[in-house]
Image 1 (cartoon, rainbow, N blue to C red):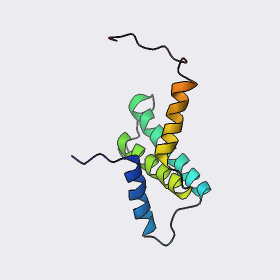
Image 2 (cartoon, one colour):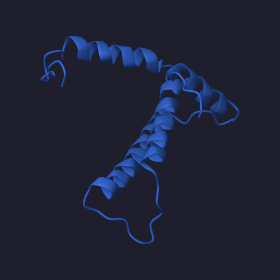
Image 3 (cartoon, helix red, strand yellow):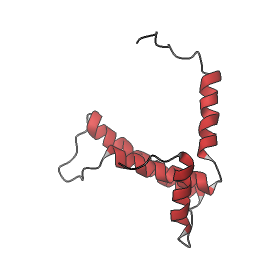
Length: 112
C-alpha cells in the first residue's frame, strides 16, 4: 500500500516531474483545454458505468480512478503554473461552505 500524500506533496511531485522538461508547464488556456478534455473522458466513463450508454465492443476499458487521476494531474499543473496553493484554495472553499452555506442543506439527525 502506498503512503498517502498531502496536497502540498502532490503539487511538489508534479512540479518536480514537469521541471525536468524544457517546455515546462503549458499555458493556462492550453491546460484549461486539457482539463476540459480530461473531464469529458471522466464523464464518458461514468456514463458507461452508471448511465444508459454502453461501451462499444471496440472501446478500451478505462478505470474511473485513472480518469480522475488524469483530471487531478492537469488541475495540479494549472495550479502550479499560476502559483496557487491548492491547500489554501481548499481551505477558502471549506470556509465558504461552513459559513455562507452552513444552513443550505438538511443535516442528518444524531445516529443517522
